[in-house]
Length: 151
View 1 (cartoon, rainbow, N blue to C red):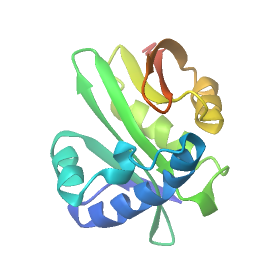
View 2 (cartoon, helix red, strand yellow):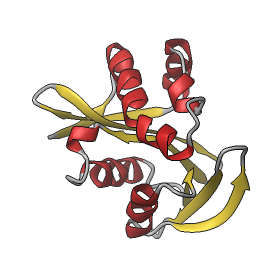
View 3 (cartoon, rainbow, N blue to C red):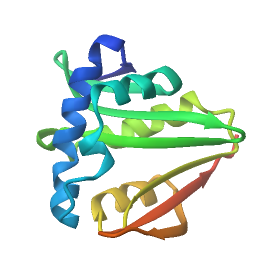
View 4 (cartoon, rainbow, N blue to C red):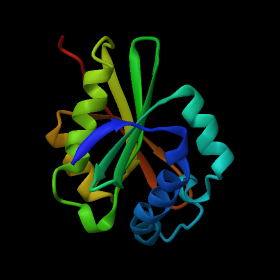
């Protein structure tokens, strides 16, 4: 497996992977209008212009992705996705380590996930993230997590 920056030519494949990976979240919350599922190609292209995108590939196939951007002293991490056939192999963990390495200059990392997204919560907590707030939505509650960067 390799982890490397995403090229603009990868965006359609990343978007398809994102939609596939977030199906389990949609089922979990019975909400198929989650932003990762409704994002259009134009939207991911806009994200690509302002964020660092990484991909995990196995034999030339994109099986995972994550994106992030720095704002002030905080790195906002989003849309960590791993193809369902490749989950529980450490790919998400490796993508997170690499995004943290690329933003080593920030003081903290921040991300969010759904309250019932147990695999994601377990992953982030295992990486040292701790909950600092919650935000109730119509179908679920977002759990915001942070990790202080100890350079």
